[in-house]
Picture 1 (tube, protein in one colour):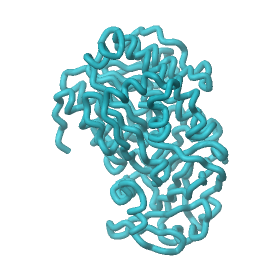
Picture 2 (cartoon, helix red, strand yellow):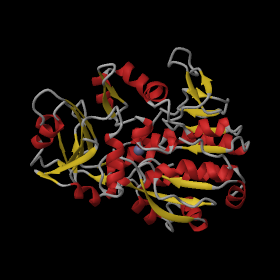
Picture 3 (tube, helix red, strand yellow):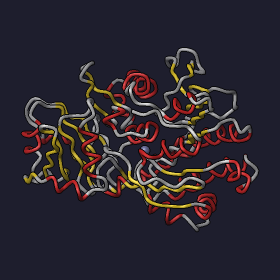
Picture 4 (tube, helix red, strand yellow):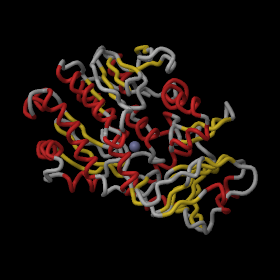
Length: 412
Ligand SMILES: [Zn+2]
């Protein structure tokens, strides 16, 4: 999984010498565009991929949200400044452990739990939704609480199931040191054929794409390609690699260019809590309909959504018309599931083209790239299958992989 890789970037890179490994994989497989969940933000999207479900089932609503039970903001890392604004220690704990052990619904089943329960070995490298059955202590005592991950687990040097000798991941993010760590762990795993399922998560591409925009991250894509090549070479070459493994290559969401940023909270009056970041916002309020009307005419807002008597009310610039939902890929299904998440705000807001909502600390990516909204650019992902038919939605990835492994899905 290459975080934030857009279909157009992938399609343009295929056949291009800058991405030789991705090109070779594409030549061996079947490709289509897929659709992710809403809000199209990393913690929500990765959790949907890992659980095969939308947020109504897994309960992770956004990068930043209001915890009604604990009466506090949860911030998974919109920006370093936003983490500071929400409380550094608490935010890091929420991101690393809280999301998996407390916020992720106990009723959702992760792919690692399904694979391990079937007596097979699941491995995960760096993916932030990792809940499994094996207990881990941090590599440095006291640095983080104990957590539960898959049987084989490598997480930014912080939790490691095996002594793979991978280099320090946080040394230089801009130069791709996190994916270097992932590649070292991946090489170790493939060399030993040490898994039945490997979730190999490369996060550096999204980081570069936020800074340079979705088309400006070619150097970063070359590094993602090299990180995939590491796996192929560890198996002894492409033929050996594809003899041994089926491959599903995808991303968690897209990205679009953003030129301007706005504070969503500046448009909301009265008692309400606004959590916004990237291209999605949520408002926690007893009067979602009134707040939706307050957003009429706000340039940064494309549309807003709320539930009334179980039905979606969609509003854009003063007009209430659920037909708006049909303008987005999977619009009705994704908005309904997002609103039926008990941790979501009472009003969900999708940003207008080119706009971003500033986070808790006022940070944004104007001049670069962002995602989170319902529009196709934020929502579509490349989906390449080799030995697996590529699914149309990211929530179908889990079942596709389990079927390939011969693991029957536990009925909901
Ligand atoms: Zn992402």
